[in-house]
Image (tube, rainbow, N blue to C red):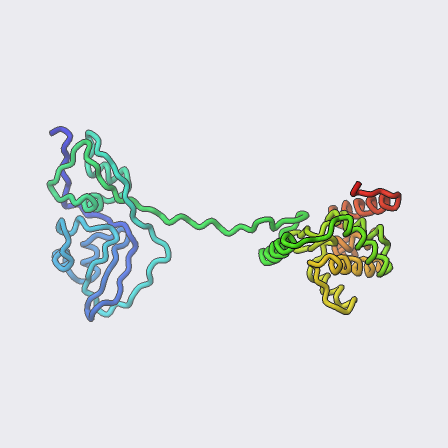
Length: 318
């Protein structure tokens, strides 16, 4: 038959998987074949012969047709167990339909597997024939898919990237606020005016800052975990709590506004208006040490413009 080929024998076959020897009964061990091994190499390594290994493990094909990754018995002399490799290829199968002119050697080469593994996977022995149209199971390496690196989501705000734990807290706060019934923006405006007057802060300034920060909306939480209508971070909330003499809950609208207004009170007492507004955004120490960043300058311009419009009677809700 022109389409029949015979399986070749007598080939030193490199085997496919990672190797390990484990402790067994005294004088014995188990060896899992690694890349590049042949049965003769293993026999030499453990002071025995190919014939003994074949007989001991009942291997087919005189040892040139064992399954890739097969664990075999070996004679050892007190060898200690080696660690399993942390990463290794696994074996899978693909079905190949033999075509005219194919040979075991060419199919094995095409799929980068050994002839011995291909024979073993199909229970072929030396002298067996294959023919066009015969389906063969071809063993192939399947490398475990690398896990995608954990990438932070929504960690960047205003050109700055924040740690995952900060963003995670922001996500939790955002979820809490989404589940709550909160005041309307008109109600938030009235609260801002009332609390600003209580602490001696210009109401238009507090309103302008809050409009720039959140549009007078309590549900807003940034990736930096700046919370609510006044976009107050937890550290500022702690600072403001010490001033008012009670713990402020930034998720509560009144406490959130109180924290922001108290900060504005201290900033305007320490610096002129534009520097105070910059300090609300960038931190007063950073502004005094490094000057205003480009985005801080834009922030200050926006707030002062909104403040001037509010003083002229502008109502952004209409």
